[in-house]
Length: 455
Image (cartoon, rainbow, N blue to C red):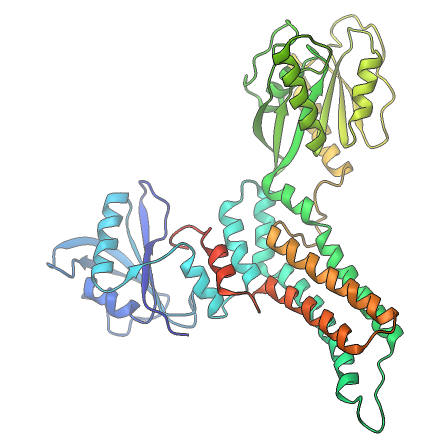
């Protein structure tokens, strides 16, 4: 597949010791020689050469750069690629890039290098998306998920599903091809139904990891809830190890939610400090309570903070019963005289943690409980399974699963092989979209437009 030659700065904007300009396309070497006149006519591939760069327009000196040619097909894009490793600095790099463009290249669009790598068969679409995931990763676990995708673990699973669908379609189409012969080939309906069920189970197993995969990449939503003045904001500050939320002995200090990121054990968490939930006549405080309940309903995990120096009453029990997700129960203010005992907790909860949150030694048990609750709630995928984190992946798998479900019904009801084959082809098409076998250009455009320029 022939393309023109593109160029872009491949390193982040800002000052730095080294900045890289990447050139890719059939004219990558001739364009480079217009700047690097001392570059050999046939430079060795993947070897760095120290060469002065000059303007192709007036011959003025630009830089002393390390130039590395990576000849096709052994390059990132699968075509000739040259990288100019220049001194860093946004003004300087921009001037060198302008010289490259003046020599015959055009500016690369966002994600165009990776798009060429995909179109030239250097990687499939799942691996191409993994590069963006790797760049955008905000935690070590998200980074590891991206590495798994880039290494091809998800691609291998998708290919295995596709092979099973192809086998089933072959059985059905064989019965269609030979239906007019003297010795009619009849598909074994029971065997076909079993094969379709297995394939759908494989798809649904990957589909079931979507929520877990999203938590890996976007973070686990962790709400901090409780009655007014129970110590929610103190817990928020303690976990963040910074005084982010205002704390006060006055009930109702927190009237709206406050959120912040927390990195713990390689996982990103979104902590949300909510307004205290209780009875109030204040319209602003009532709105804060409404928002608190809304946040609790959408949380993956909840810290429920209770004041041990106050009686545990019906309002506290109601709040505990309203929380459906996994939780950590914090029995706070144990440094004060206690007026009750911790209540019985649901089986999937962690705690009670009997603490005084104003004490520094409360941090370690809070962190340990957060990690324990994450595992107890099954919020993250197991290390043995592949996981998806993109809506595009989920939607394609849902369509494939629905098509297989319809094919299974048609098989069990004795409907014609033509209908079964049609549903199987639709399922195969949906699976093919995942790796890019049948992805339309407009979909590719949307995918790669999210990439940064230079990648």
